[in-house]
Length: 405
Image 1 (cartoon, rainbow, N blue to C red):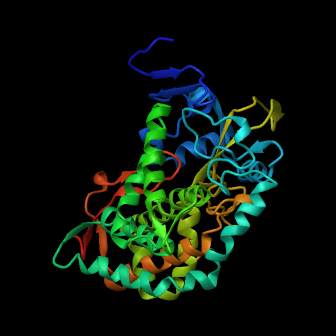
Image 2 (spheres, rainbow, N blue to C red):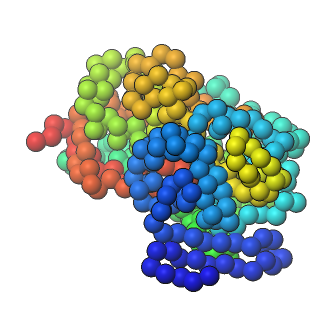
C-alpha cells in the first residue's frame, strides 16, 4: 500500500490488545456511491445533496475505507436494519478505524446502546426510570434558569457564538446536575465528547488513551459518598457521550442556525410561541444530528448488495428523515408540519431513551432564546463550522443580535 497526495493510509497488525486490524483512510471522495466517507469536509458542510443523489442512483452506497462499509439512504432500508438485530450487531456504534472483537457482544462496551439482545433489554431497563417525563420535568426549572444566565452574559455584545457560548453549555450542565457532578466540571465534558466522537481516525492506541481520560474522571467521581462502579462508568459514558450531550447541543445549534438564516420562520415563532413544539419536531427531522453504526454479523446478500461479516453499516437517520417516499416536501423545513414521524431519535430497540430529556432541553433553549433575543441573523455564514463524523451540528455559530444592516 502506497501513500500519495490523495489518501493517507495507516494500518496496525492484529494484536491481543485491539483484537482486530485497524485501517485509516481519509482524503477526497472519488464517487460517493463507491467511496463514501462521513469524515470529509463536504459531508460535514452539507450532506443532504449527497444523500439525495445517492438515494436516486445508488441507495445503498459502499466504501472500502475503514475496512469496508455501507450507507443506506432510504427510510425503508434504514428502518429494516435498525429493527433487524438478528443480522446486524450494535457492539460498535461509531464507524471508525477499528472494530471491537465479536466476543464483546451481546453486552458491548457501553451498554445498553452497544448491547444486542437478550442483554440489551435488561441494561436499558436499569436506566429508564431516570428518563421518564416526570423525572425530566424536575430538570426544567434549573435548565430554564441556566439558559437565562447564559444569555445574561451576552449583555452589550453585538455578535455571539451561539454554539460555543449557548448550545454547548446547556446539555453539559443538565447532565452534570443529573449525575451529581460539580457544575464547574460541565465544560470538561466538551473535551471528552470531541475527543471520542471526532477522533475516530486516530490510531487505536490514541483513541484508547483519550477514552481513559473520561474513565479516570468518572472513576474518580463520587455520588452519595461512594465511588462509581465500573458498570456505572460505562453506562454513564454512553449516556454522556452518545445520548446526552453532543446530540442535544447539535440539535439546539442547528435550530438556531435555521432560524438565523430563515427570518420568516423566526418571526412566525416569535409571534406564535405556541407553534414551537411543532416546529422543533421539524427541526429534529430536517437536521437530525445522529447517525449510528452497526456491524454485519455474517456474510449475506441483503437488498441487492453482498455484505461481508464485520462490514460497517452507517445507519443515517438524517438521510431517512429526508426520504421523499416517507415525507411530503422532504427537503423543505415546514415548521407547522402536522404529521411528522421522524427518526431523529432512532428506530428499533435502540431508540433514544433520553428523548424526553433532549426535547425538554431543545424546547427550553429555544423558548428562552426567542423570548430574550427575538431578532438575530448569521453574522458571517462562511464562519459557521460543522462537526465531522456521526453527530452533526454547528461547532461555531456566530450570530448578530438584533436587526442586521
